[in-house]
Image 1 (cartoon, rainbow, N blue to C red):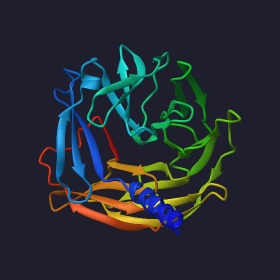
Image 2 (image 1 turned 30 degrees about the vertical axis):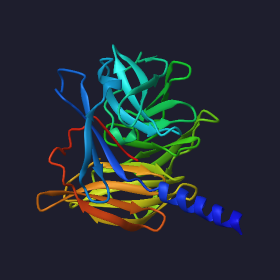
Image 3 (image 1 turned 180 degrees about the vertical axis):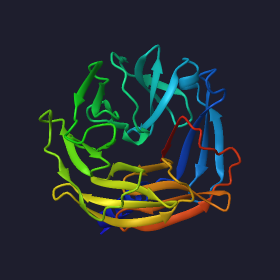
Length: 306
């Protein structure tokens, strides 16, 4: 009986821990002029600023912050940074103190333009991925200090059909050519592209569309008339299903983050900013609160939830 009680407590603790409690935002103290960064931490429960601090683990080494990658198994934060044209992963404590850094990957071929939500980190392979607007998948491997480029262009791959992508957390990077709803993936186990299929089902065709993956599911994020629409993708059948829509108050925004089955996003209403948390297992709104911090704006260099 005692063992069962302990087991139930452990399960409950794991469940509670899986839901993020704070949003971490990273700003430059002097954009374009220095590499000094500060963090602003906003509580997801009441929208208040928990605290803000300098990030010496990045600033002291004169690194340019490009992206917040993940919270690792040690509860430390990992960032993508750049110095003199080379990419690097820097690990800091949640308070911003330096812990470690990876090998450098030198960018031999700079990507064309791309959409920030298509940038994805693969912790298992210690690699960073992004799909450029011309259909090239860039792969930066920090274990082998290697950059590689794979072309994924299909018959619709041109300037009129911009690709967006996401990594599924396992072995595939999914790609959507938005104008034609042409859907395919690159497989990191076979090193091949799949045959493209056309997505069908609940298609919400607006100019702003992205792919997102979390908790072993793939979604299309679509925007229209200041609403955000979340569509669940059946990657085997190539169908989509509208599972949630939310008033955004913005035309298009990439101010959203995921952790496990939770989806966190920022919306606007009557001139105020709100932060909401959705549970993608039940497709329900967990919380919505007004952001109280006067320091918040959308010019952050990296952000994540934990």
